Image 1 (cartoon, rainbow, N blue to C red):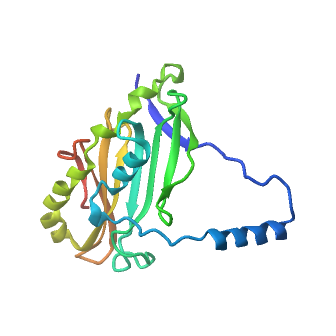
Image 2: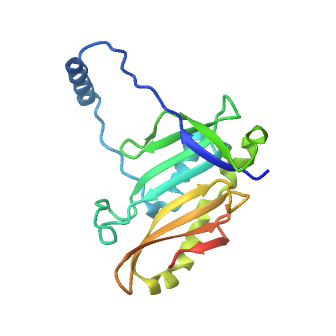
Image 3: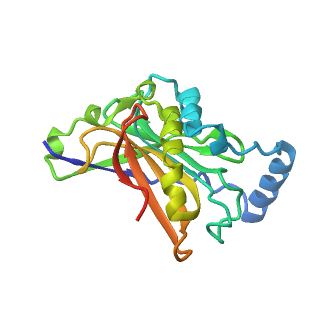
Length: 226
């Protein structure tokens, strides 16, 4: 069966139980926040390794957890994107879709809160199937243990691209490290590197990407440059 897995977070209800007025709730929340306020955690950075998000997930969920997709994005800095006010390389997103330990037919999603350094409470993921018979869909075909992914090895791939990227871009930065689930372009999981830069020829901002095997060693698709 050829199928495309589409993931979407299920809607989550609010926590308001209707007790208290809006003013009371706001005042209580402000007082509680002031009392419980803690120093913000230092944001992880790409300098810690391309697998910095993957390591945080493994620490939180365990290395044997089966995952479907992982997304980590990093700031490229204002020199490349004038709207990006964060330092280059600072992580802005780290999320994971993983197998629900209480129901292996389903997925959960959690996101790293960059400010606190803690992961949010998991939320259910709605799975839809296109291009195949949904009754024949098997989630196991779209999962891989975290321990089978070597995102740290991407450092060598990134270093090997420096000369070529330097010829095309006057300045560039790695903007994303992801794990992509099997889909229409690959029947296996792949790692993905995203790059954003300014073209040396005309200073236009350009995005590119490369797909790499999950051992982090072999580029299977290279669209890093126009």
